Length: 266
Image (cartoon, helix red, strand yellow):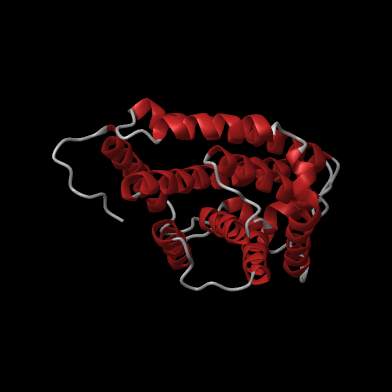
């Protein structure tokens, strides 16, 4: 969606222009996936059926967190304070002519929470990798990913417990970790939701969970296999940080795009 022509560059237009540049740079990196040498070496070592096992593990983890774990996750951070901060930020940004500082403040606060989760993810992945714990780490990884998404959503005053928001979260995770035509298709679906408030190809939440689980099991296959080997697994566990960072960057960009789009077309 293009911002309407404005004779003078307002703070809102400047912030939108900056976002478009950041988005273009990020998506340019996703045109084609570059297979690492480590993945190539591990490809011959991964036992048959491991990806299916991981697929099932991710699927169960998402269902478990969505149905039973969200309340537990909310106890690990001050949700009420985050909501109060979001209310103040959005009130300032809702002015007829919001300042650039007010528009950026929401993104800044979302980034602070997300960056803390990156550190936790790195420590957990390396620690479990040292012990040779790979597949069991999936529940923890999913919990940290969703905590990260919940906190970003809260910073943008969005109720992540709504089904459509859970679907949005699952699409964002996929958009962050996929490449090529698949990534373009997912990115377009996300942008359609941002522009119009509904999905073009809306399906059940179970289908969104299944697709996201398949995406994660494919992308994390080699690293979770490596993480299951004691000591050496620390290398695989460290990649939890890498994947979390990719999700973090993409999520902050898309949620900020939703925020600015609302300001432009409200």
